[in-house]
Length: 75
Image (tube, rainbow, N blue to C red; front, top):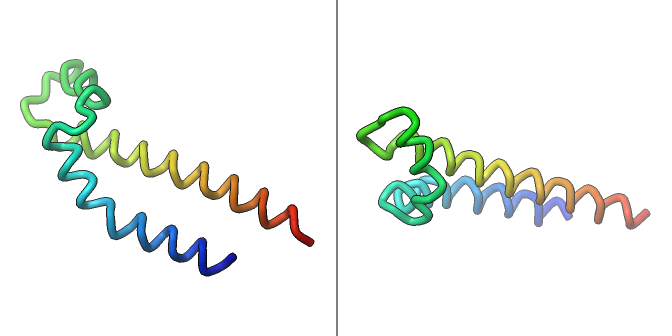
């Protein structure tokens, strides 16, 4: 189980910069466009960073919850 957890965090850490670049270039722009319009930001850099961080945090929370459920299910 430790290997699965370490692998997940390694993959998460290595893919985040690439995902942020793709996200900032327009992939799933509907997530950061409201923030960009609300703040009148000309650049999509920091709104896309914020939403990318939220997506990765959500994935981490879901993974940790599932990991702990599975870990506690086996004595």
